[in-house]
Image (cartoon, rainbow, N blue to C red; front, top):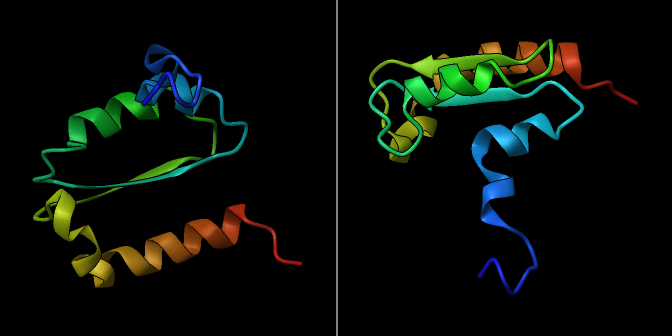
Length: 87
């Protein structure tokens, strides 16, 4: 796949890719997420722009993060309000 889109996967590791962003990001993870565990989110926080934020939903897994919308909605809405200008 990497050859088809002419990239080197080593250039697109999580931390490499996130450092290429020039805007803050909102990271969301579940406390029981085996795909993107909280430890990975902590590492990414060291590579993101100021203003970025991480939300970790303690009992959530990768597959059901969005079932926890009640816990995610308000902090996510507040972050977007602060960082995404409205026209």
